[in-house]
Length: 393
Image 1 (cartoon, rainbow, N blue to C red):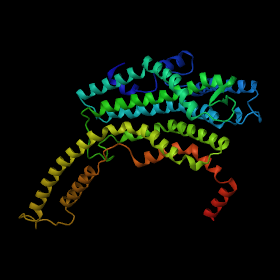
Image 2: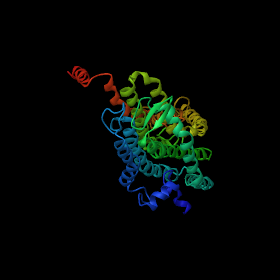
Image 3: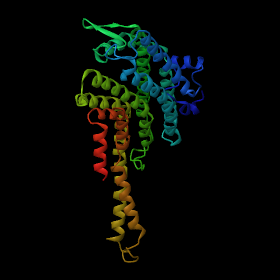
Image 4: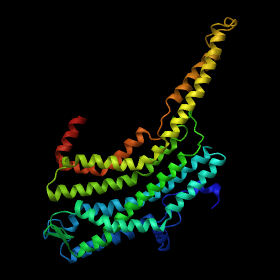
């Protein structure tokens, strides 16, 4: 791979043992094509056996148990909505991240020796992304910790298609063994793999933040010229939507099968949104120190420039001998003075983090969107329609 094209090939998604396995199985191309094929194959592995086995056990539908398979909202949200979204997110992040990282070069933010360090940071990120050991550790975490977490925090206490409570424990049914040994671990691995990728991204940005980037305090983006990084938040929208779907499915099961009400989850929802949105945007916070230094330097330089210009303006128009030789109104000197003031305000208004309010609000909305339908558990569709009619008319 030629160094001059490293930024164009940068991706936290393409690479690793699972990606290579998908390539050999013809489930993806070099640029994550065949998304629908991957979704169909993976969903068939994690969902169809559960349907078949629960039907064979007589627990797919009907009133045999409190929660038959076809009524388990959490399972369907997890495997038929959230899992496909995790797969779709790979393509979205890959396509958008390449263009965003390339702007460090196209905007001439990395120059000279800094460019070599920038390329080295990309190569380091790609090596970590391709780590076999990392994905083996994720598998170990899933089977050692992930299943226990599910048993204690997500599994229902009522008789279900996958297990029957007995003496404070769960006796797994036929479909339950596939659920615990295959479906859940595969989903948890795909989700943890995303957090590993976010770690790779955060580590790359940390390396970049320590470089002597050519920040531009007067840049109109008011982020020193790296405002384009805020756009990366939109790339992770499918990932946040998937995690919101996961939370919504868990809450729906609690509401419909354990008698919970939506208002009981206020703290959980707030904490969840803060954590998942924070994980996506937190890597950008590493630029606060260098942007603060660039802002101080900009204020110093432009402050001195403004002082020199004001002194010259005063000398000419207030104390100079030529102040009456030309009209003050319409003079280019006045316009230049105003432009100087505007430039100084741009530097003073420079933000220290490349995160916009619109990005933050849209990511919060994407996370909460799957939870919105649960509002209907607190108000009937007829009442909701009546309230809307009152508002409109």
